[in-house]
Length: 356
Ligand SMILES: Nc1ncnc2c1ncn2[C@@H]1O[C@H](COP(=O)(O)OP(=O)(O)O)[C@@H](O)[C@H]1O
Ligand SMILES: [Mg+2]
Image (cartoon, rainbow, N blue to C red; front, side, top):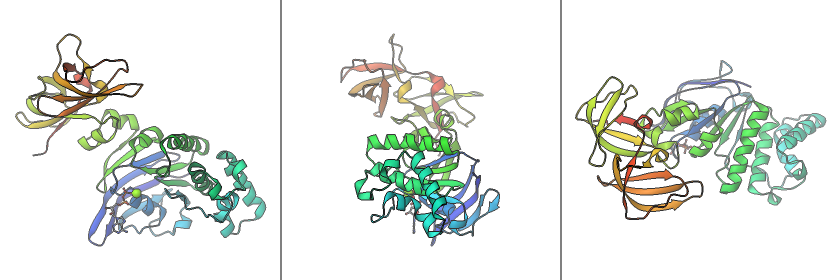
């Protein structure tokens, strides 16, 4: 087990800087997920930690020692990729043992390690098969097995579930969560899928354009997003955003309104608002409710309803032309075309001043 520390880590390809000064701390045994849209630099960061990419600038420490220039095999890490990278002509056993075989480990010791990994991954019955006789999920388990037998201090995963179909992805997600519980190893997991990030992580690092937008516990980021990007990225359906103007500002509140929204006082959460300026008010779909007594805060015309079983997702059009989403009880009956009054708890909103 190990700690990993990134300090002002940068990466340039030619003149293009793609990682622009990143600080991240990974505690011993922590499960950290790097999440962000495609191209934000997740794989590049992971590959620099693994030693597969040079670090242009900054310091990378594993267990307190600078490892910028240490070769990959000496870093005590093992990496699992999206493409399973297993050998088709080898059995599962040979694939899992591969790294140990090339390091000339003695057979008895090697067998013990491979059997141990097979047990942890519940694939004892698959050990004599070839990859062509395995499902996608089983192939990925082989790749994970190959990482486990190396006893790494840190596991690195780069979108390991992206090639799997939705149902299998959920199963494997739970297996990886269980693996972390069983092994207690430090793990860094890269994904563009915010559900994987929310469900697996002790700590989420949200990345955008080579920069950390916010890092913290999943529910901390969900409830207290530091900026619009994180607010919109975590949570499904995504948070609604309304353009509003700032009417008044108090010590810990700001009063806003718009063509669509009647005047409401919401928490300002330490952010600076200026009277007369434009701001964005975020309301999660789960917190938008049909107003019971006609005292709604906005009128939303029902455009479309989607019944998901556990909840119903309603698409609404409001007076300023923007579209909102409400996630409401599964048995609600709504009529498309109806103008309905909607409300929300102001304490559960997120207001951000617009940059001018
Ligand atoms: N070998 C490379 N040469 C030039 N640019 C690269 C190279 N690898 C990645 N990039 C660029 O770096 C950025 C981050 O890429 P990557 O880390 O793969 O993103 P992610 O994994 O988040 O989708 C992208 O803009 C990508 O085009
Ligand atoms: Mg990637």
